[in-house]
Length: 203
Image (cartoon, rainbow, N blue to C red; front, side, top):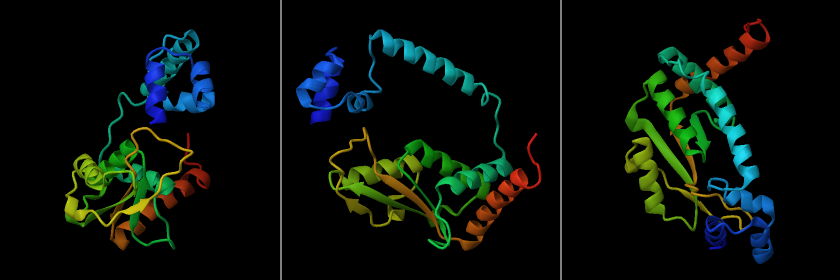
């Protein structure tokens, strides 16, 4: 309720200092809650202009970038190296994140690179007790093109009162029980860092 009230006041042009005094919330928190909202503040507009310029500079590196099956395998493995479950925690493929686009990207690359059996892909959600379980499950099912029958029993927790993430859809874990495939992915990223660090595979 407080988040909605703060965003409503910001949309009306109320100054951050006034909102801070009204709710006793620091400026950094208000900025985080309202980062996506338009502003006529001169400093905000100047910062946004610089941000947009830098993003366009980065986008140029991807403009002619194409991913074939082999490259999809490599990128999948590198992403998994960063965020995937590792042995001995598990010996299956497990990739968890709350970033919807990261989960979608990983799954698309995984499908292109490794052609998994679709009915073997499982999904586990960790959600808050303030979520509508059915609504969140439908969201992820549609987003990932995975049947709700392949969703495992979710973990339900209480949200931290000191933190509020806008449009939070829980943490989604993609699971695929194939130890051979898990070991292949491990082999790719291990070979990658050996090539970069030990064999001078850069330049």
